[in-house]
Length: 305
Image 1 (cartoon, rainbow, N blue to C red):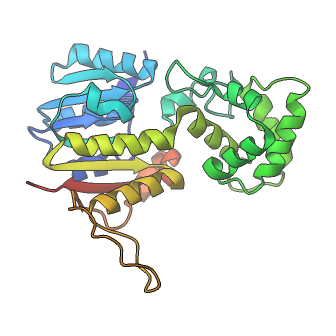
Image 2: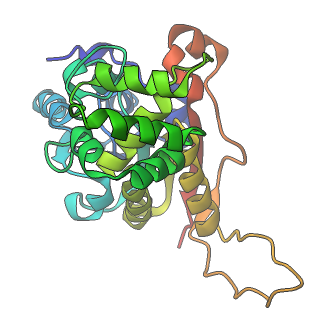
Image 3: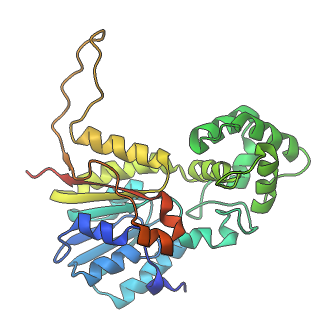
C-alpha cells in the first residue's frame, strides 16, 4: 500500500479555507486520489467525508481509510456520475483535477514519459487505451486531438510522423512514443516536447473534459444551500471549463453586441463566486512541491434558498 499518510495535496490549506467551516460539515472528495484532502478535513472536525474515485488503486487506498475511520466512506466510480453514487446533500464538494502523483509515479500506468512503461493512460480499468487510440485514429483525427486537447502547435507534423512510424510497428511503450514525438517537435524549451501529446492522449482516453462538465453539474445538484464548490485545475483546458461553468451558474453571460438581438435573460443564479481570480500556490509550497506550479483554484457557494 502506498504511503498515503505522507501524501500532501496541492493547495491543501487553501481548499480547507474555501470550504470552511469544516467542523461538523459533510463533505465530498470527488477525486480521492491519495486521500490528502479527506484526511485534512477529518482532522479539522468534519462530521462525515465521502471519497469518490474511478481508479482501482485509489479506491483501495480509500477502503483502507474507511476501515480505520468511521466518519469516512469510499465510493468507486466516475465523478460525472456522482449524483448516482453518493447521497445528497453535502456542505462542500472539492475536485482535484488531472492525473495524480500516484499515477504519474507508476510507470506501468503509462501516464508519464519520464520512465518507460506500458502505454495505457486509463484512470479506470476499462475502455480504450492510449495504445488503442494511436492505432485506430487516422492522421487528421490525431492532429485534431493534439491541437485541441494538447494545444500543440505542431500537431499536424507530429500526427504525420506517428502515422509513418506505426506502419513499421505499433506504439505500445511510453518511451518509444516520447522519443518519436520529441524528434517530430524538435527544439528545447521549458517543458519536454512530449508533454502536450501525452496530455492530449490522456484527456481523450479518459474523456476528462466531458467528465468534468458532467461532474460540475452533478456537484451543484448535490450541494446543500450555502454549500461550497472548490475546484483545483492544472491546465488551461480544465480551468476554462471550470471558469465558464461557475460564471454561467452565477448568472454571468458574455458581453452582447448592438448588431445582434438582445440575449435572453439568464436563468436564476445558482452560485455565488467566491474567487474573482484564480488562487495559486504560495512560494513556500512551490519550493517543496514543484508539481504545484500550474495549480489554480476557483471556489463558489451554492445560492441559499
